[in-house]
Amino acid sequence: MNGNRPDVTDEDIGMRAFQMRKAQAVERATERIRQGLQADWGMFTQRDLADLDWLLGELWAYEKRADWNDLHFSKLTADDIKSMIEDSREMRQEGSHNTVETLTRVGALIRSRSV
Image 1 (spheres, rainbow, N blue to C red):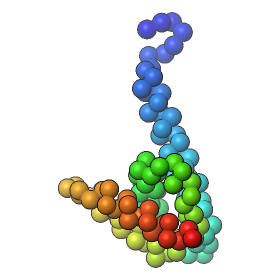
Image 2 (image 1 turned 135 degrees about the horizontal axis):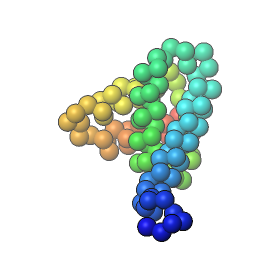
Image 3 (image 1 turned 180 degrees about the horizontal axis):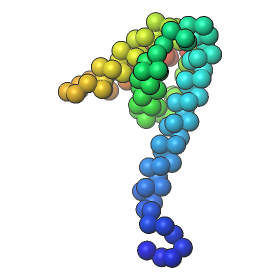
Image 4 (image 1 turned 60 degrees about the vertical axis):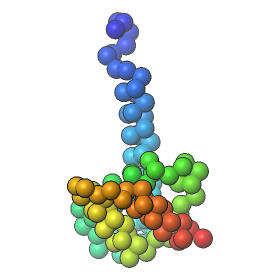
């Protein structure tokens, strides 16, 4: 270690940058969902929103950047969000092995609303 740089590896910096970009993308997507749902947004609990944010983060990591940028989150319905929250909870259960299948399905749902 030299005296000019803290004990942080390039890998640590890269992982932190990835996490920050993911958090920003999830925040923007969540805000678009909130704006699209308007009054229906209030029907979701803090736990629901945390589960939704987690799923959006997983989806962001899974999707190609160009594909993510084409998703129109503001067009989602309250029923779409309920379904996504259920998917999130199922994915987080121990022994869940259908992660790619679930993320593909969620991406397809959002794309279907984006047209």
